[in-house]
Length: 184
Image (cartoon, rainbow, N blue to C red; front, side, top):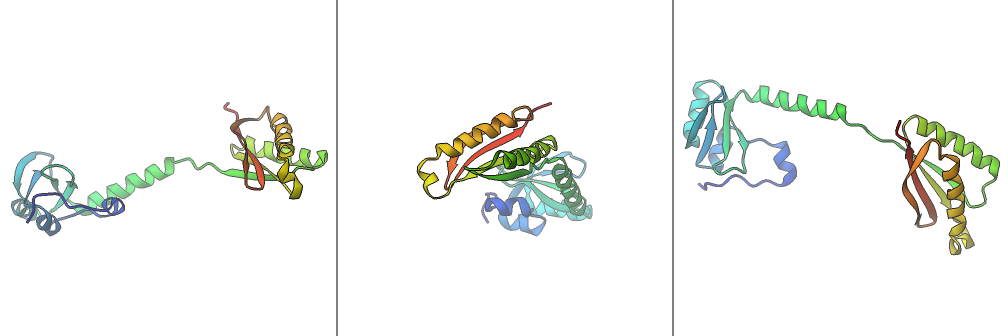
């Protein structure tokens, strides 16, 4: 048996926690922590497993990278439940940003542009990000400044509701700009 911690691929490390006999197979000794949080010291993994069995609990590998690895005597079901609960809480607190895309052409009529700007302002007021894309057809590809001009007028029209996150750039057949709502 070796005295090193088990090596995992990064994704496996998060999904899989070693318990009981799995720990004994990978390392000879562990730094053991009791169920009440007390330090039991560095002991043989078999002895730590025996202590856990005497208390009707499991031996769980908490820190496999440490030297020696750290294992704790605990109720594994309760441990997994609390881990899942923390993960759900973290997921609830995440804010997902929605990006709306508005497509324009280089020769868009002013009335059509006003209509699309009205919708963009509504999106921005709802807290969504907006990406304007001007499609360049045929010979317009040779002169992309036409697309930049359209985007310049768009940015001026939404100026009160938005700020430019990313300056206008060429993306294949499109000239794009990304705008975000102004901070309140």
